[in-house]
Length: 278
Image 1 (cartoon, rainbow, N blue to C red):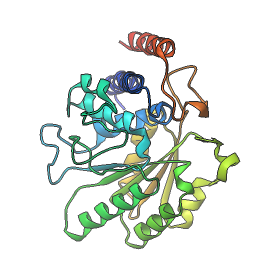
Image 2: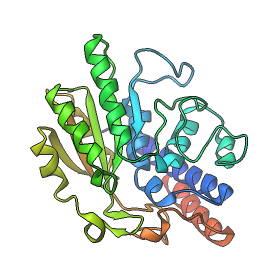
Image 3: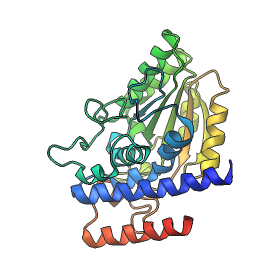
Image 4: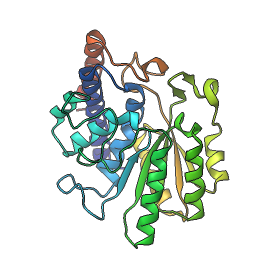
């Protein structure tokens, strides 16, 4: 990866994290932890990989992104705002009455959202359907979906995985945001789905394990995915709450908004990080 692109992605991802904190604090509700952990994945997809156009969000041949872990909507919204689908200032209206930005992605009102999600396990099924449609009609778009490692405890995820492999949906890539935490504790404490890679392999997916905060590893994994004639699961090891010191690796920040003092600390840390990058 070129140094200039890597720097641009790091700067953008930091701004995305700032948008996540801005939105959740303004809403006084939301899910900062899992939004911060998948921020780098979404940043890379929208700014370095996917064929999308914010000026033409319904472009027929665009690549699709389904945020299966729909509660991480603040991350998707912040990326879409940075990409230019709507004004960054709109992030401050998260969950407000009359705002387009609901608590979970809404494809009817938010430019750039390809599927309404929120019920865990259902998003990947929608992504599978999109990928099948692309294959069936001879379209060229690819489909990407982001799952939580807690989400894959849902049985519907594995029904979708079985179907995708059976139909050889090589145009489908699933990222598993592997931060090892869900709302009630660690994955092991709640209902272990480990080892994640072996489970996807058993369903005949190609699997790649990476550091989900390393843009070079994300890039390499996606290049590898493009060479495989089956669906691909990228197991992305991440840190829940990444970028905000007091939120990192704390399951308590799964669905809690920062208060004013915590907001100031988080934004101070992110502003300092941004200044060091520029």
